[in-house]
Image (cartoon, rainbow, N blue to C red; front, side):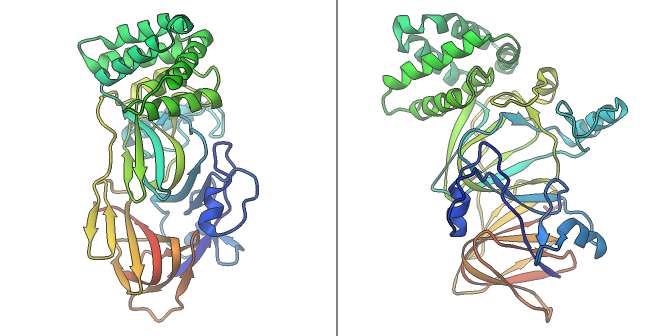
Length: 398
């Protein structure tokens, strides 16, 4: 079963007004276009065919199970909120706890809107995709703090106390314990004056910056300070790795790992869940104790995904979760065949492609950038022909 699906962009304030229109070859509307959702998630289910029916309804009528994943186009023009997601066990316990407490599922302070985890992967489609992800090794952060403290001389005197306190917490011989203490201080004790002082220190450091490893980080942090004035999350961002993905590269955010996408266009794939614990750079609710409880505070490099070649036309981004696996297929006049383990969604991101279900005498579906097709769970595989690029999302290996 092949069902053409589409959706409308979601106009979150952090979205880019140009990246998705450029991919789809249309004029921008002037409004931010942040995400397009491809799937059956009730928050914004895809429309089937001419749009008269949503995918969740179509799947229920066909006796198909709910999709375990949600595929998105994501276009960031400014920082998303810093966030982490719970494990499956944490989500089940948190959801049951909030249900028992009678907290409405759409309440602003609701943390667990369902009982699922939310690991996610993003693959860069733009030439550069910037993200803050994971906690930087402490030595690197302390070096950056020293640079900020000294960048502006007397102009940065107001930042000295806050940065000294942060550095003191990070001097703990157990790095993870020091990072937890630093995060708790940043989200609970840092004052508006401390945040403003850090923004001033970043501006002074940028003015005197050379082309080194910290220059991009300072630029990203200063942009976040401008977009979220007075937000304590700026100190959280200071503790995080900046990663710059090139087109086709990917990063993975497993349970507990802090992340905040900054700029660029990407294909995102995640488990079907709305469970988000926020850690700043947002006007939304931040529950500091619960964030710290689910947080993985292990320092280390950004969790980049190893690319696995699958034949001469496919690249697999397999992060070892049962909910999803993602394959990028590039086709230049030959037909690519893909085996399926269950229901799938194929999203075109370049060129013109034609999808057929293997072994079935059924109409093919033509795809252009931004268009997608749902492939029913009974399909053994698909053939993709034409010239262009597509991403295939399906359940992961159990």
